[in-house]
Length: 336
Image (tube, rainbow, N blue to C red):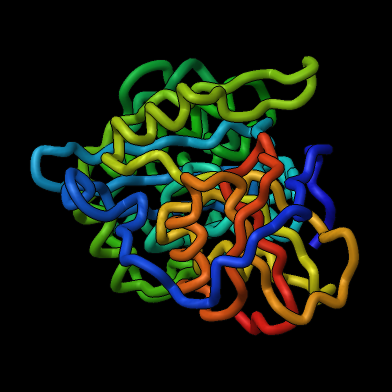
């Protein structure tokens, strides 16, 4: 785990021991109430172009309509175990790491991930006899002139549209995702380059048919770093997908083993937590994991974390972190 960009870490001194037991049962951020109507989420990625083509697709459930977000190409994501990473670099990681990184950004767990290369995408499009795309402009491509306006594109034309190296790439990607979801997606056995399971992806794409695009509010920091605009983004995700706002946590690697941040995040994200800072602890060699509530109000969530990890000791800090509600110092007792 490498140090994150943020400079302020949670204080771990002045900690009172609260015990090792799990405490009361609490539902996660996606449990209870309206969460029964929350969307299931799929991370969709297309590889093979110079752009990071990533989208999060939410299924319809009850009265909730299916929808999707396309990730801005210049977005910076907090990747558990790696710190702050540009979307272009996230797109080069393996599918499971991409799923964890994108889920962490949205504060909601994506049940499935699907990665298509350009050949696989073309096969999917052609199997459905093309897709209807609202081409956002006029483009000269290797597959002919395309747009502006609605058109039924072949697999070759879709690939050519996404492969262009000119302005408007984000709009072209969003229009292709919307076109892909407009009709039934006929996904074949060999279309996916990486996935957690073909059956689950097929089921989710079926339930996401007709998904509309949702705006992704962003903020430019120091004129060079693009991040989600908060709290607007979390409110938008909650409105579109029906999930609750995540509980922010800090994860520190106190064991020195690589990959601990991602392993911890994979356990906690489905329970409604978000890793807001991922870094090394003050030193390595912690034998036992510490789960530190940074206020009395966070004790119940700290106990939930301890229960989910299956190891560690819960405590409360007298020094608020100002970043996360809970600080987790991962020790050698956590094996993933």
